[in-house]
Length: 209
Ligand code: 5GP
Image (cartoon, rainbow, N blue to C red; front, side, top):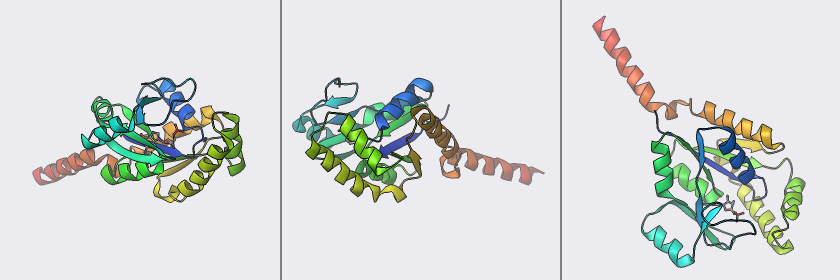
């Protein structure tokens, strides 16, 4: 079995990344979700070790020093990062690992792992994004404004991603992400070992004949 892919899913906070990721994991066997570490306070209903590993700044900074994170970034005043060990283990087991991370993290992954597949998830419109953020009732109006400002900043990075996916309907969106991942895996840079072997074998065949 080949090594699993690294799939970055970024997008505006409120675009529904979490829901789409959960749908992918429950609908297809090949996906697993990386659980990030963060210094932000848990929202109602969030459980330590499920949505995030909630830690203090001291613990987070110690993990950075020990090279325990694949990437990390500061987002609206809090640290977020991807624990390295779980991602590497899952990839070795052939699983496609979903990283739901912000654009700073996405760009770090692009630099370190050029074969990673980068998707950017958006709402059908800016007005829809504001509506979804307000409907969550977990953020104050000021926090919503900060998240919208942040979305405007993040939009600048969209051209650096491989694909843009519009999240209009959950089911359709999860299917589209899966289709994209399956075709992206066929790109020559992600089939390098196979292509090299094929080229060598062809040379051998030609020389023998
Ligand atoms: P939230 O506080 O809404 O759960 O997440 C805020 C932002 O942090 C989202 O854009 C989310 O994708 C991002 N994020 C979550 N985990 C990570 C991570 O491990 N690394 C980075 N760079 N961003 C993350």
